[in-house]
Length: 509
Image 1 (cartoon, helix red, strand yellow):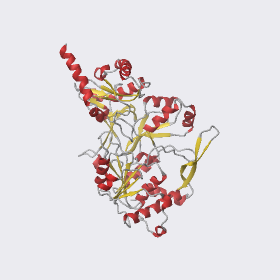
Image 2 (cartoon, one colour):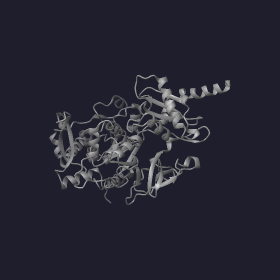
Image 3 (cartoon, rainbow, N blue to C red):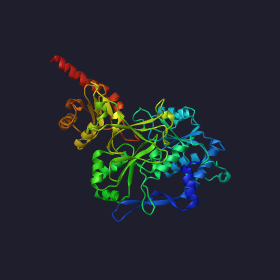
Image 4 (cartoon, helix red, strand yellow):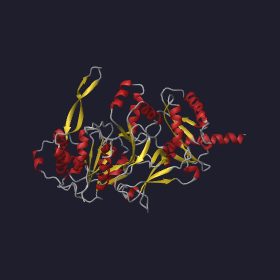
């Protein structure tokens, strides 16, 4: 059996339509002002045949430099920003040469974990962005190289260097690329292994994406090829949130967004207010839900937040009720359901990412079924924290309410309080130069209004609001979301003080 991959698609199109455009690259040095006075960068067109030529030549270069005639599935680390054409060519060239690239986002620079990840994957060499802090890798005895500028590939001997030819013939369970999770739930990224079959089925998922009538689509890439979503040309929701907020006060940007055929986004959900504004103003959003481990599993219709499971041959998805009456019911009285990918589904991840025993993949994403086969996303399992009295607190609900009510006061917030008598609200102010005491009072007044519609165990005591400095909450670079358990650890002493103070006051009474 043969399997399609990134490489087979590129080779097929390059053979059939060599002059078809693949990339339009910005040329900043040739920027010129338009009629409105805005600077518009020039563009360089890259065809499929040009891209394939660059990939093949760079693949030969790395085979020569690393001392292989064929990558033989040897892992090579690629620590890159993933934002340039050269980065993309490096990724494809390593696969073309038969290596297994282990992609690590340059934004992630916790050096001891970087070393651990490349050690775990048994990387035979690591190719790094010129700005990467490579000393720690060299000290750990890795062979370290720098990403090669394409215009420096002048070695004529490369022309006669052969390349591996078995692009489609390997087994479906062969590992062909390694990514990593964001580390938002486990406190550190985990390696995710993707097989040839996984790439094949996710390529077929991409075929279900909306298309324009003439087939000549232009996809604007705003985030990094260091993450799986970019092979689907889906924007991360954290970046889209920023764009939508800017568009609310920028009519020209709003019109530009309206003119697009589709805006496909993935990662964490966009903000509730941003989503409502976009739908109201006709911004053509389409949501993809998935993960690094699975690729995308569900999608919405344009300008709608309701999600539908993908239906492809070989895929199978289940929705399991969450145990417990208080835990398992939503505010509208429906059951909370967790999306599960059974072992038999062709896009089920490697066993290392799945449950021991049964081998199913638990996404930890919770939904309610609003119509048969139609689902509204609720939150992550980790967003539901157990309080001291065993009640379950829906932190995401509270955070959304606070963010919407206090958007003129705060930039971000997180609710913590696992195994505490009541939840605690941690807040970053919108402005740096702010009276924290006054800000806490203002937020407290608005929280009191939220409390009126909240369960008793989910009510925020206004005295249990902690104002931290801007940027003080721990967050993941890739998803731009706050790491709840890490925030609880960082501010443990302050949280302890809230409850010890309340206890001491109670004793005095």
